[in-house]
Structure formats: C-alpha cells, structure tokens
Length: 466
Image 1 (cartoon, rainbow, N blue to C red):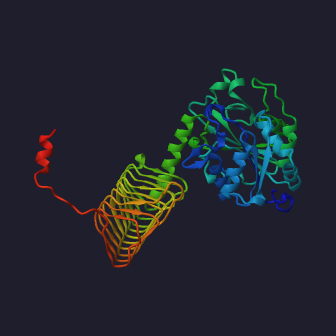
Image 2: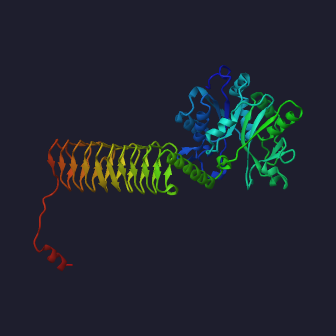
Image 3: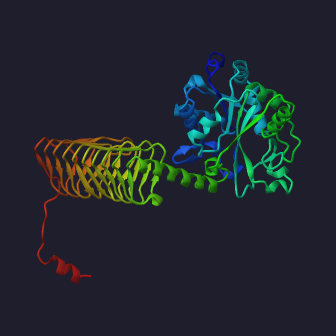
C-alpha cells in the first residue's frame, strides 16, 4: 500500500499508464515489459521518475498481464514499496479511462485530499530524460490547471494535433489523428501524452469525459479542451512546455519502433560513458545495456556486447567480438577477442581471458592467464594461475553442478580436463593431455594419460590395406 499522501503534500503523484496489450507488438508479453537496452520499458520510466523526484508517489495502472507487470516492477525495487500502488483497469477503454481508474481509487482520493499535483506518463516512452520530467514537475502557476508537453514533428502522422487560436495563441484542444480533418492533419505541433495536472481538476475533468469518437474510447487528450474552456472563463489556464528534442518522446508500438528505440538509447549510453573517459573504437557496432558500469580508462573494441549488471574497472580492455553478461572485470585485465563471460563471472586485476574462452559463474584471481579455447564453469581460480589451451571444467554430472578449485600459482597444461568436484592445489603442475578426477596436492605434478606406444611400420601397413 502506498504511503499516506496526506502526510506528504509536497510530493508529486505520478500515474503511469501500463495496462495496454500492445497488439502491434505481436507478442504475448505485456507491451511495457519489452526490453530496451536490456531493461523493460516501464523500468526506464520509473528510474527516470525516481531520479528526478525520489519522493514521488507512483500509481501504475495495470491490465493486460497485470501479474507479470506487477512482479517485474516490485522485483526491480526502483520504487520503495511504500511509494508504490497498482491500479487495475480491468477493461481497456482508452487513456482517459485508465487515468480515471487511478483517480477514482483510494490512491486518487488521497491525491485530491493532499492537493498533490499529478504527472501522467505513458508506459511506452523509454527514452524520456530526467531533465524533461524535472521540468514537467515544476510547480504550476497560480491560475494553471495543467501543463501540456508538446513537440514539433516533420511527419506528425499518428499523433494528436495541438489546435491553437491562431498559429501561436492559446491551446484550444487536441484532436486525435483518426478524428482530425485534412487541414488539422497539416499541423506539426503534437501532443505527447504527458501531462502535469492540478489533482482536483484532473479528477473532475475525467468524470466528464465522453467516448463519442471514432474509437469509442475515453481520450485523456479531451481533458485539455475542458482546461481551455476554464481558461477562457478566467477560472484556470494551460501551460505548455514545448520539447525541442522530439526523439526523447519516441513511443514504441511495434517491433521496429522497439529496435529503433534500442539503437537510440544505446548510442546515448555509449556517448555518456565516452564523455566520462571510456574509449570506444567503434560506437556503432558496440552494445552497452543501461545497467552496465564502466570506469574511466576502459577500452572497448568493435562488436562488443556488454549486458546486465556488468562492471569493468579502470584500464581494462575488452577486445573485439566479446560478449559479457552480469560479470565483473578487474582493473588492467584483458578480455577477448571473442570471449564470452556468462552471468556470475569475476575476473581479477591484470588477468587475461583470451580468444574463444568461455566463463560461467567462474571467479578468476589476479594476474591469471586463460589464453585461448577453454571453458571454465562453476570454477574458483586463484592468482598467477596459467591455464593452457583447450582446458575444460567438467562441472555437470547430469543432475548437479559441481565446483572446480584451482589454487594460486598452479600451472595447467594444454588439452586438460578437470572432472568436478576437484581441487588443484597451490603451485601444482598438471601435465598436458591429463584428465584430472582426483584432488592434486600443493606443489605436486599430476599426469593422467595413457603411455604412448609407437609401432614401427604400422602406418605403411595400414595405408597398404586401404
């Protein structure tokens, strides 16, 4: 249950509209849970709101896939539980109906009692910057009933047009694309479905909405016309914030728009890290998810993918073609080319994870070398260890995963296997071609392979028989 709004009069209330199915996405996944830069769209919005207004009380209007949306939002822990409420829109009858579900709920009643302003945001605008939310949430003027966010588009098809008295006079109303006349469709100023309301006005205006339109839905945009009428009678006013960066307001309605939003956000993320001292050799071929953290002095070469809660420390080099997921890389380490670090992997300082090496839930100490063509899963590897080419931890017996431990200063030759659970002791030496099934004592030499036998002349006899 959200905290009492009456005790937090200065805190803005935020309604996020997240009930829609998103039929054009052609997916059973709820629309707002489709990922952009590794994160569901709704989490991008929640993170921006909390960064701008950490005291905000947030109502998420849910409908299609409500249980899954609620679970993802709760588990993200972006919003403290006492500041979060979920409002059910059991029948999707338009954006105005969704907002009314929120304002008619106990949460909405508390908003009105507290005289808190209300910010309304769609759940499918993952590119919203924190600065935009901050400007929208600035206090309304004494006579204003709402602040409307608009932008200008060279191709406004699909958006509600902002109708004014004259070219730049007061806003009169917003007309949706389907209901617009040909002349109205030529208007380039569009509404963005983002509003900042006086709470009591929003509640009363929502109760007067009509669904007499081409889609038989209750449009939130129609509230603007009610505010315009109040302004003409001297009882209120409309403030307009025109946002020049229209790309920030790009909505996601189908898989292509999802891909475009992902590319835009990816380039923003890379630019931000570059300005903080990370070197990207090929920004256009690199993907960095929003939850990744990079230190100053990191070098990222072409065709690298960094995912999840990955951290890379100062001076590390991620070479071409590497994929890193939910892993940590220590300072001055080198990874790749074409390495794959799967979730739960940690690489210590000044270590080398070479080409075609795969780690999974493996912890690697400092100054350790795993140069090429090896797989280490569920492994704990110490410092100053050398792993030769073609080493494999055999960590799965068909039922359970087991741990391989390789202690400090061990040397493992090429083409070896360790059948877990097994420990290779400190300073020990594993001869090439060995399959290790028993623990190796510290400083011991272990070899586990058949004795070589040469049969003179057998090759000539074999070739003669074929």
